[in-house]
Image 1: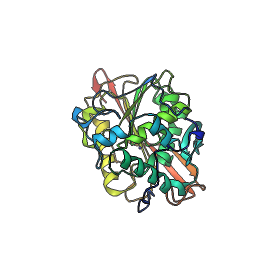
Image 2: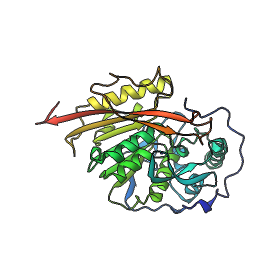
Image 3: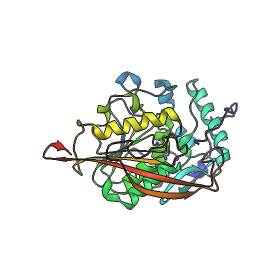
Image 4: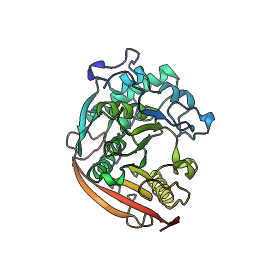
Length: 326
């Protein structure tokens, strides 16, 4: 599951709203530039409606998806004065629009709620897309250090958030990258971050999707050689669902074989709750590919909640030889 000028500030239409209750703690122009990126035409895009067959996440509907489409107003929201263009701890190569002070996450949530209310009258989830969660950072670092994992391949980043792993894949030479998140505003943040990284007009084709892929047919993933997720196992139900789904994706015999001769699944997880974290055997053939220590001392208790976290990157490879999976 990783936003144009900092001077752009908040949109004049963003006003104060009642503070959302609870914590979200898990345990380069203001106008969109359309070249070299697109939204999925199959109903999974940030501009598509549910009528085209996309399965949307709980609390989301076509009106909210349209309100949070990529446009100057939403770009202003994801690059407002509460975020700063900076790299995350593990990926100095990738500048992104991120919260500088985790305590500001509630203020940013207020602004997104106010924008949603003014646009469509709905509510929405916290702005996870403004925080570089360490599980995603681990996947991103692994890809940057091992570019052959994605080079020339099609990549799907599920629960992309700020898009750090998707951006890393694009930087590392992927042919096509789709940043998927049930929050349509995450797609806007990803595209703004791609602009900031100089990736919007590069050779990698960028896509966004807001489909809830865990509730969609597994066939939705078959066009991708690499499927990855980061920091998605922070609550029991979601942890179980993601591990089961990623295991099924790895085992899917219907995927289209592209560059690399098979499918690779990556899962980054910092074991926020050890009882729900992936362990050996969570998927057939899963191996610990890398481990990283991330210092997050400047991050608020409302977000990371710990000054240092260790994150593991799990990898599953399914190869194809002579048309038979091995």
